[in-house]
Structure formats: C-alpha cells, structure tokens
Image (cartoon, rainbow, N blue to C red):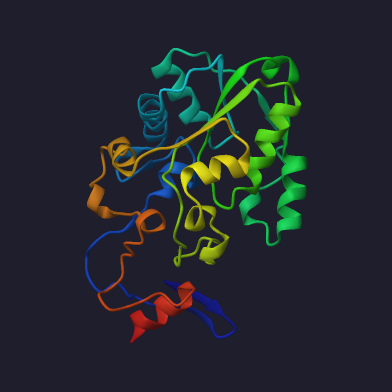
Length: 250
C-alpha cells in the first residue's frame, strides 16, 4: 500500500501470506474490455458471461440491448448464444460517470436522467432483454426499466452479469454500507418487483467463475457475493478499508 500525505510518500507491505485475492469486478466492470489481467482477456470473460446468462435465464425476447457501456460485451454474448439480435436501445451521455459512485441518492437520480436515453423507434412494441453488469442499490435499474417502458417497450427482461451484491466491499469500492445494498435485504423476486422488470436473472457464482477460465478461481475475491472476505482468520472488517490496513500493520 502506498500512502501519500503531508510527510511524503511511504510504502507499506502488509500481505500476511502469498494467497492472491484479485477483485472479480475487474472482469465484470472495472477494467477496460481490451485489458488482459493475469492472462485472462476481459473481453472474452464478459462475452462468456453473456453466453452463460443466456443458458441460465433462457429468456425469450425480440431484441437484446445493453446498459452501455459496461453491459455491452455481455449483451453481445447473450445475443450470440440465444440467436436474438443485439441492437442499441439505450444511448449514453459520455460526460456522466458511474451513477452508484455518486455520494447522494439525489445526485444518483439526476445522473441517471442525464446519462441515458432510450431509442423509442428501437424498443417500442418490443419484448426487450436488457443486460447490465450489476445491481447495487436498485434505483438506477428501476429508472432504466421505467424509461424503456415509457418509450413503448412491451416487456423488459433483465439479466445481470454478476451475482447479487449482498455484502459490502472494504477494499476501496464505495459500497461499504450493507443496508444500502438491495440484495442484502431483498430476494431476487423482490428486487424484480422493486425495479419493475418483467423478469430478472443474476448469473450464478459458479457460472461466473467458469467465465474467467484462465485464472484460478481460488485466487479471486467474491466477498461482495458470499461474504468470504480474504483476510486473516479472526479479523472482522469494521466498516472501512483503513481498519483492515491497521490490522495488517499490527
């Protein structure tokens, strides 16, 4: 860990063993799709996530669309596997960042309105299969589903290329309050009702692992899905990454 403060730059080694615990979300969302991490093509992993989603969900529809840009590669994989055509149903404003990172709900809601627009001529009267990378709080997904239906979509079936996020990340991602994670308090069916989709399917954890075939599955962190945090036995995260770091220094 590199710490930069008023006293300068310091580097602290704090790993207690050689076990790896790389973030699975690099492959799902964070990394650029043209990246290769530990020998695994991010594009190939996301494309395979879409294919696995098509096999697991078996949704029937007229078109496949993505929530751009992070859902696009998985959506093309779904279309390839299912034979349902992929089209652009949502257009992204390139000047708005990731909405779940916004600090307040009001700002997240405003960002969604500014970030995406549905193409009415594409989705009107269609049964739409929409692919996205994750559902964190659920508010963004609900607004997108509503936007598509207001644009005339007959049905919206949603596929997610990550399992339900039910546990906070203590290693740098801004999802540290569990009560804000919709999957921590709601079942898949309850999430579907909350966002207003006609159907909802999250990729299975085993299905996700199969998509990152070039990497040892035991070398990845899946804690946000299953609470198996890659920390020493007996340590319990106390709400932020600083605690974990301090424990390591001890």
